[in-house]
View 1 (tube, rainbow, N blue to C red):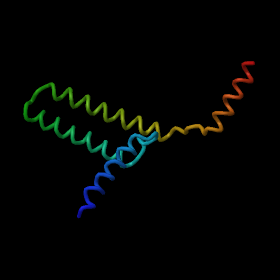
View 2 (cartoon, rainbow, N blue to C red; view 1 turned 60 degrees about the vertical axis):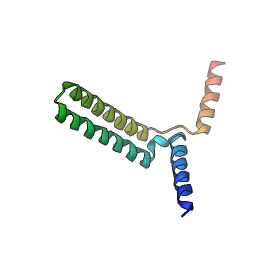
View 3 (cartoon, rainbow, N blue to C red; view 1 turned 60 degrees about the horizontal axis):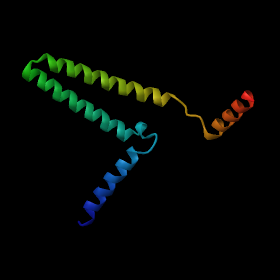
Length: 101
């Protein structure tokens, strides 16, 4: 039983270290958590909209949906791009140096 807190702490540390690595924005766990946060925020805003009937929550809900859509679009575009390999970058930089001289 003493190993349980240590294991959960190491899981949390590995999750946060995974988020901070380059390219982690395409990790499925990160995207699932991000979608869950946006969905929870939407539920809260819709609940407050029905409870208060305030136009402010209509605007906040629209902003939240636009932000969620823009994040989904960015991730879609990021998945469709191909990053150049380091060897290709070196070759391109050598070609540019030859052209300029």
